[in-house]
Image (tube, rainbow, N blue to C red; front, side):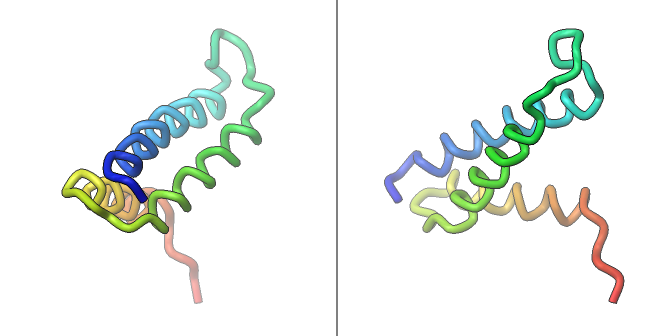
Length: 80
């Protein structure tokens, strides 16, 4: 993956996460977001690309760690 690509994906991921949160709250442009499933799908694609990419810069590594940290904090572990 070329340098800077993971950083760009990470910035897009942040924008998509914000849109997903706003859609869940029903505050996208003052109305319900009807494309929340599409946004969620785009978030998943961006996350997979970032985590699957080979970090070529420190920024790339930070992007990968930030996503992992986000899920470590915001997603409850599965009960076994």
